Amino acid sequence: MVRDSMRDSGGGTSSVAWVVERPGPVASAPLRLLERPVPAPGPHALLLEVLACGVCRTDLHLAEGDLPPRRPRCTPGHEIVGRVLAVGAAAEGFAPGDRVGAAWLAGTCGVCHFCRTRRENLCPRSRYTGWDIDGGFATHTVVDARYVYQLPTGWPDAEAAPLLCAGIIGYRALRRADLPPGGRLGIYGFGASAHLTAQLAIARGATVHVVTRGEPSQRLALELGAASAGAGPPPEPLDAAILFAPAGELVPVALEALDRGGTLAVAGIHLTDVPRLDYARHLFQERTLRSVTANTREDGRTFLAAASELRPTVRVARYPLDGADRALTDLAGGRVTGVAVLTPDEG
Image (cartoon, rainbow, N blue to C red; front, side, top):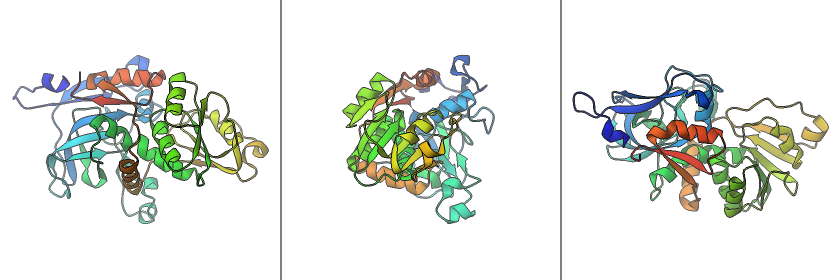
């Protein structure tokens, strides 16, 4: 196990972390595994022992350079389940031994127009786990206690981790899609976030149609209750749709599948170029195209409460911490059904 092999010369436990050494295609090995001292928490922070960390497509975008790095040698990972080891002097509500969740949103200014109007996801000075600060592809990490979540009880660590981004972002995307009660929802791409969002929508009475090329993902969608799953267009007009695949060429395809007054929400942080849209075919009849930007803490709390009640199936592919590069390679190659999760104690 990674933990057992990492001891510093003084006999204390050191930290092991992956860093983005040189952004580029996963085949070029952009990540590097390092040993370094365990970080110390600041006044409002918590030091966490990482118990599990989901592998998100955003981590892949960061490793490959689709998202420009915001600091050198940053550690990816923002779906973190951790055990509190130390508490900063001004951090409130947590104690050593608590199990907590840290997600994508790591900090906001709290004073700008967006923060003051409950839209902190749009804060110009927002900071993000695994992009602005080191994330969970590590044995230890430090997070701001004000942006940490209490986790639903009874969830295994590896199954709780994907709730913290795949679940929360999917929840916000579903809100942005304006799906009416009992409506018809199209989901384009069926990875980590989509397989949780589909279950939430179905539980609320929606008819869900999944568009994805991978046969394992199609089978999973049908197992989870989707009305249809295939590579072609949905079998009926849609009231709403969510694009999870980072493929801009699917934007006009999804818009054309909407019924009058339908909404398409684009859930990813990165999207390839969108082809030219035809107004009459894609937008007329009050069709709406929306983006989804991060999440608020209220989104996180609301979704985690809903997940605690719904108990969605979380399809997990486990990887040891020293297999993070392999997890990203499998994600890039479409070989992950559900969500990849790093579990540092395994290996």
